[in-house]
Length: 332
Image 1 (cartoon, one colour):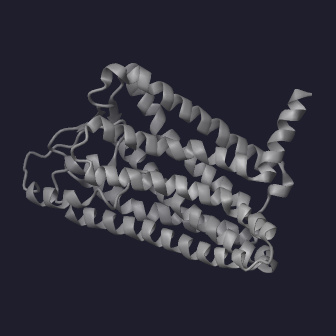
Image 2: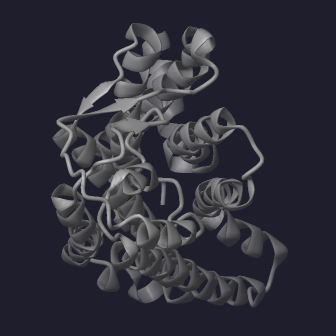
Image 3: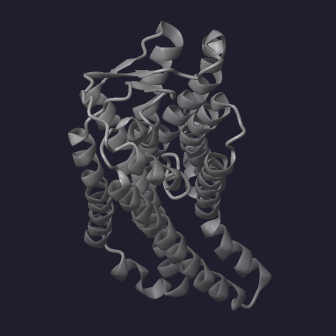
């Protein structure tokens, strides 16, 4: 998931929620205030430069992938359909955060409407869940293509791919809707200040006056359900894939077959490594300055969408060849 990890950042809220749930001065703010990167406000304009560059690369790269897959009939297959789904989630995740972030950095526009804040949280959390589900679907595609290649075209038909995509979307939406429903109903009586560049769910939870222990346990359960099961299924798929690869008779055959999984493996590493680093920073980095946490959260949300199209563009021969054709025609 692309949102700051839930599983290692929820536990400390439980005692907090139980001890402060008896407040009586209830108000519901119409807006929240996003502080940006606290302590580095003077450098906001300079900090915006690398973030803008990452976002521009992500937009250009992901739309290029979509354009190439749409234009090239040979890429109209399950692997590239799942890739397009991954591209869309990357675009939504980065776009949900960056425009408001830049308005803070450039125009000091820190207010965000209460409903807009909840909407931003919904997109970040639900599309993070979808992103993880798509990685599982891509692992399943590679498993069938390598371990049972004769049945690949009959197993992963277009209707099956569409149903898998729909299941991924519904899972992301249904798991996050209960949190959004309760967050809208909670009273907020402490303050309306969020010390981040976006509406981070943990920060919003801390502002609620209600007993949030139930929803905290729910978020923790969802995190383990999503991340734990998805990583498990990916690991099982690649265990079977590696067994099939090592059973091939020649080294060239093994390398060629493994190469078809290379892009997907790199994307998995880019996604879950940044996820793990952000989780560990959140859980054990209590002595780190707040601005470091905020910077890491923003990097975590923007780096994978930037890297994924680069990885697929460089490591997938069909996409790379199509890119070269595209630029060579323009050169002529």
